[in-house]
Length: 618
Image (cartoon, rainbow, N blue to C red; front, top):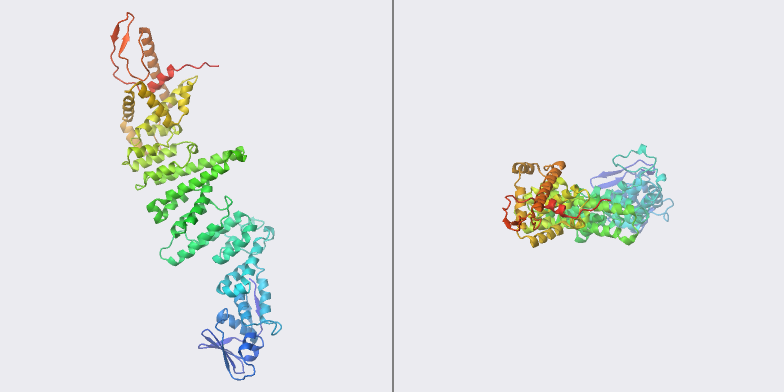
């Protein structure tokens, strides 16, 4: 910090009650009243240097005169600096008092027009040297807050802002002055030069009105990331993590700071972190800022939602208004919609997108889907959470967003356990987005034994798993019609198979339902143990065992067909319905007993695949 000393006399201004005076052999002939303090002074040293006092006093009048100077900027402290200079008493100037001394000297008209080497010119010279120092410029700008009108009229504030901006624009290799930088992991000795955001912490000490002026001056000439970093540091220093209900007056100030920060965030994606934006969104709910500001924060956060962390999304529930009305789910949904808009814009086919860009775009979509499913899993245990909120957020992302549906199944399973009383139609809507083709083997085995799932969903899982096993058994592949059925969406596949079954056999629907109910009742003790352990460790069946069972069932069906063909039997269909009669070699009809046990779904599928035309191997 720079200092300047003016004057050589060591006398001091003494105080007696509310009166201050200078110790001289001559009695005082001028009384100056400044606010509540009375000064007993002398005309001779003062009138020669103060143009204002010359106008208010008659130098030829030897009587004691009284002058009131209540409007002097800086008050008693600034006035004493000026009168000490007139008496030749030593004064010390620095960035702490230069602004008020300069304003007071202009008020008293202490210019060189009255006397060469007057106080105003000396203060102007020293003020210029103060602006050459980085921290002195910051400190001088802060002191202008006490004298806003005089500082603006004398352009003191503007000169301070310009001096700060010039130093921010300085090349990093030329930054040699002292600055504040307390970031974790930064060791000054290990760096040859200053970090690019060296100035942000010192500027963050300014009041909002001065910080605003500095940012507006420099933002067009520095990278957007630096602007975002400065806004981030300022928010960390001036915005609390939680709202203090006892400080109602500070809410208005905090709201003003937050609105300014949001308005100054650069439009370039990645200028600020998603975690910082979500923090602003949480504080915006607590400070009750305008809907326009909240919408802007959600738009900015949605554009880079793939970088968000689950813990930051969960913190949105901390606001009382959000926790009771579930607005935090609507916010996450809105951010996901903004992400989709940005994703479609950057992934437009005519934009000349490269392969690497396409892969990054797909990866970002997958990360967002993983984030949304993890978020739903955390909030699904809330007993008051409406099912409509879960369905809306689940359906926000497109079908190709999720690489697998295990996380989505965990969400459905958790919600159904905590909300067992929801209707069947709501369960169907909740499971509508679930694609059984994208479930792992563990998830499928858990879903088959899940009593809370709709029956249709369990049937879809069973069909998918058994058809998948049949495909694995066939060495030459399946017929094209079956492949087309497997490539269709799960819901459409189940619908087509149901319609075909109804057309061939009205009893088949009841048979399948009975088979599923039988499947659910298998090994109840193992199922209860699995329910206690949760979805994370479902019962795992050996693949070799499953394949062995499928082969055995296919062998039984093949042997039965061979025996029927040797006896001339007529098989009506492959749906599992038993034949009621057969024709012998002599042409007479013979009654046949119905089997006691219905074939399982795996037997039906194995029989279906055996009837398909075999593709020749090349």
